[in-house]
Image 1: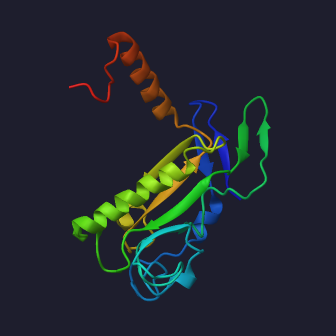
Image 2: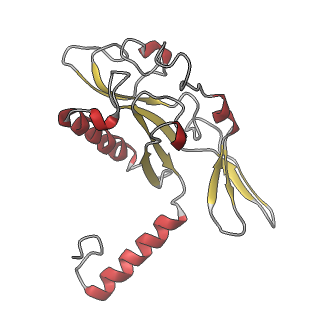
Amino acid sequence: MSEWRKDPFTERWTIVAPERAGRPYEFGEGEGTQCPFCEGMETMTPPEVFSIRRDGTAENQPGWFVRVFPNKYPALQRDIPFWSMEDEFHQAMSGFGVHEVIVETPHHAVDFSELPEEQIVKVLMTYRERLRYFSGEKELQYGLIFKNQGVEAGASMSHAHSQFVATPVIPQAVCAELQSARAFYSQRGKMSLLCAP
């Protein structure tokens, strides 16, 4: 089971998830055969939690443009018992959070950069929807969408997809950015650091 561990030197939280090592690796020989992310293979994944699909098509069936489901090999889980531990050197807690897969196209051999504009819009709308969906949950403080493009970046499946995680911990770098943005705003009045020329 995954867990959060705090580095006592840097004060950074890290996710340790040994079960992720068991996820399938699709690159190389046999690539594209029985891909669980392809249209028509919906029973090979957990049930979808969100999708953009053709009118009149049913959940967990063909007919989708973008499909989201819980990661089968999650780094974080919502349905685990909460625990925490702290001693003079270590601090840790259960691997609570959300980890979802966002399949960006029903077609296997299409790279994200090759998707038509209307499909990319559907993917971006899905990103926004997942961030909004979890934004009001008190126990979740931060949402991140990321994409490992290719085997060199750590992807284990070649089918175009990205991932969404929601965590109870705000990353240290993000906290520093927010603090700088607040300081900039208080010094400059109404001007936001993100809107500065």
